[in-house]
Length: 88
Image (cartoon, rainbow, N blue to C red; front, top):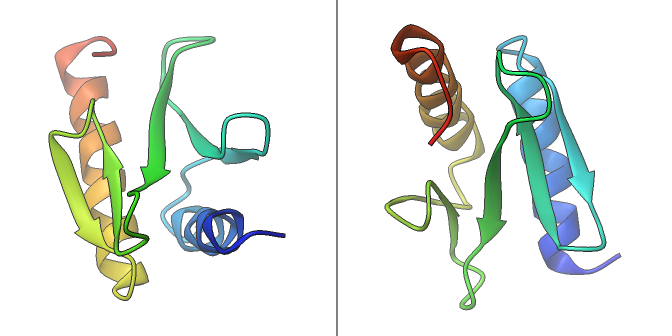
């Protein structure tokens, strides 16, 4: 498994502590984070440098060496989508 996929799998575990469902998608090297809208995901990727997670079209980033912080920010983002009533 590549370093990208390992980081995404670790982030998946950290998100589960916030009761956020997600799935590592090897075919796109991304993490599909479930939202309240069926079939709509928040996609999280590892940056080209391997130093950051990025999501929301790259508008949000968080260092991969702070897994709890990244999970907390992504969980907050997903919960905010719920409050707004949709995806991005």
